[in-house]
Image: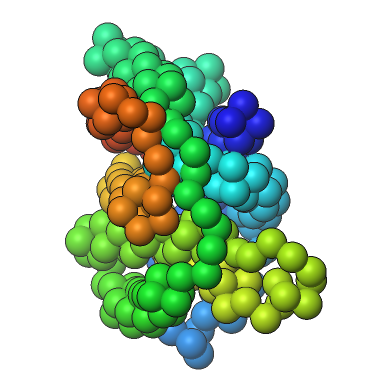
Length: 278
């Protein structure tokens, strides 16, 4: 439990920094970019030419390594709430590096997230078994197809609605990463390579990363990040509790629910501190 929670919070620090760098790099790429198979290669190449984006990519890989450890050791609701705390990191960095000032409401949000994570940590029971689940695997594959199609449609527009929709789809993609990581089988390399989730994990991450980059260049970071964080946190948490048997300590359901709500609400309040000035 201690190792998993430490990994989740470490990932939050890395993701909080990476989000700002990704926004800076994405906004230097022409906004007519879209999720089109014929243009996707050019879009990715253009992103990779941005130093800030490359730094964000490297940090996200480090963050994923830490997040993976948390996903294997903790209930999904606790691992995902820990990652949502990246917004706290971004807010605090903004006050030091971007001359932003935290109001009383924002400081209250910081405290809410910290208290919420504390409640979740205290109320968390054992993580459910990481076993094969055919229905979930099929659901992830079907979800990736739907996310890709809707992402291609949404990326054709420069309207604010497309920013929110792309962020929402990115959140579902990252939810696929978390669920796939949980479903990975322990064993030999050969057994791992035979598992479908070995491939849905990186594919979900790549799709989500591109969709989030498209969202960031179309509208405010707030509008892109709010639905992403919400879906990235809530979807795996629900799957963990209702499908994968993630446990809550006896008598601690009210504390777990209160902790989740405090973390989610506090994180959403702090999303605005990811805004980057051009």
